[in-house]
Image 1: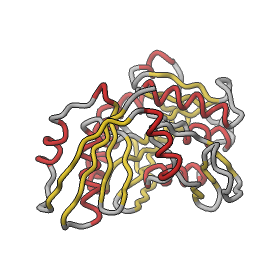
Image 2: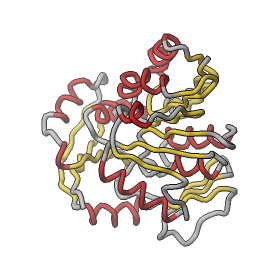
Image 3: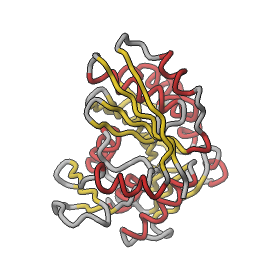
Image 4: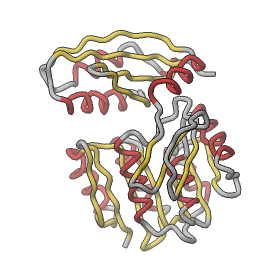
Length: 284
C-alpha cells in the first residue's frame, strides 16, 4: 500500500478562508487530500511525488500576512486508513437525498440514494464542498439513458451516483493508480460492476482513444487541469450535452467561463459554498 507525506500547517491569525487559498496552492503542487483539525490544516501527498521544495514554494505564493508554521511526517498507507476511519470520515447526508458512508459505519441515515465507499486516500467522501456541490447538481439533473464521463473520478462517488440516477453507461478516468484501484473496489461495495461503470487509469488523452461522445461530462478536479483539458472535454461532448465542473474558487470563475465560451459552451448554472464553486455549461 502506498505511503503518504502529511504536512501539518498551523496558522497564527488570518481568516478561515485563507486556509482554502493555501489548499488550492498545495493542490497545484500535487497534494490531493486535506482535512482540518481546529486551526491545523493537514495536507497529504503520495511519497513518490512529494518534493520538499513544493511546500516553501506554496507558502511563497501565499498572498496573506498571517504566520504559518508546518511539520512534515511520513504516514504508512494502512496507518492512514485507520486514522481516516476513526477520525475523519463520518456518514454524510447531501440534500436529504443521498447518504455517503463507509463499510465500517453502522449508524447512518436512510436516503433515496446510498453510496458506500472506503476512501483509502482517494479524494471524494462528499464532505468537501466541491464534491457535495457536484452531488447536488447530479441529483437535480436528468441522467436517465445518458452516457456519462467522470474525469478525475477519485473514489468514484459521482460516477456511481450517475449510474444510480439512471445513466445508460458511465465511464470514469483517474490518473492516480491508488485512487483508480480504490474506485474499482468501491464499485463492488455498491453491487455495481464494470458493465455499469467502467474505470480507466490515465488522463484526458484517453478521451480520443475511447471514441465515445458523452451526454454529460463531470470534472471535479482543479482550475489548472480543467483549463488545460477543457478543449478535450468539449470535443467529447455531444451537441446539447452538459459539462459540469468544480474544484476551484469563485475568483477562478471568469477565466473558466472565458475559456468555455471560446469553445462554444454557454454557462447555464453556478452554485457556490464557502467560496468553492460549481459551474454547469451547455454545448450548443
